[in-house]
Length: 454
Image 1: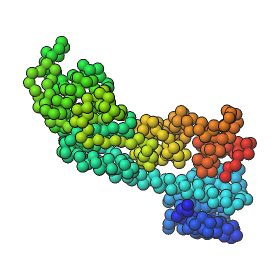
Image 2: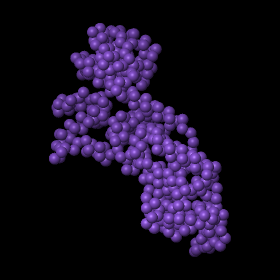
Image 3: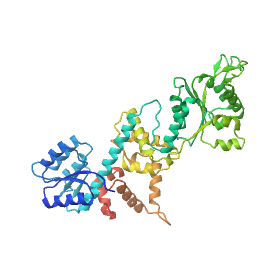
Image 4: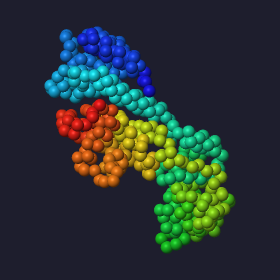
């Protein structure tokens, strides 16, 4: 697939300039501006922005280092690739340290340039995607943020908006970590109950006696130690919404009492004789098959039908992978701000792993991974080394496994280096950073193992 990209080539050699322009323009379909002098290139980058600049390092009057400096100053998102006949000298390596995407040693083939430009463009496009996601996050308003591009989740949000004003009870199902409570809060805040309380309780976190007391309250003297009246959460949520998480874990006796609240709009505190009127909306949630539980008499079917006026099933993150970049950017912004750090990117290699991971912990697990990455990141981006060890090993083991036998340590290292180079788009500087070694050490390993490093 061809990318609409703007490339600036700076090459004093006329024949080389012509060959590079043809390779970029005709074979790749890029929009190419080619000039023989850096002085002319300086004026061009002052007038317009390019996606990638390919420049010779050593030139008369104005050299590639000056061009890189000016480009980084005016257009930080532009990637600069340096061509040099002296790849081992400090000045060439220093160019990378100062922000060059990569350097290419002469002599080279046009394919060497086009592959490096393609890798640089991938980084540019990834950064633009990240910026667009950031814009979407920043322009979102409201008390509850449900970030999604998934059509199924968008449909659920539309259903939630439609039922919010009706006061009907809602049953939300889905795996742990998918955002069931977030949907409950969303329904509350777009309803006429938004000014009332939103209270929540996990029904599996208490014994039957404690859960009864938390939900229904008690009268003074109802039991030893009950020195005063206590309002339960159902009463305290009157005028608002009560969210009952893990509803299938509620004991049967309390299910009967909850059913009465829903039917009669009143409750009896423990030890009380006079009913207390309540006006509360019930939103229940579970990660279990509540319909099956009702059918097997493990959950009261009459309560099930009362709760299941409208049901929303939140799909797991593995079924809405297009939300992963959006959610990653949201959590990145959230934790960068709270930790007072300037981490603005998830590297392409990390995003590739995230997009291929099944996320048994769903959105909550993704949030934890990004939070950890921000905490460990020392630069602008979350890299592979910032991911949990078991997460990295899970993906690496899948890649490394040899049929019929366990691979040797050398085979493991070769395979891993090849994989990291591929994930880095052939960018040896980025690959070395991911591997935790310097660029010279990476070159030595490539030479030692005869690795194809295109």
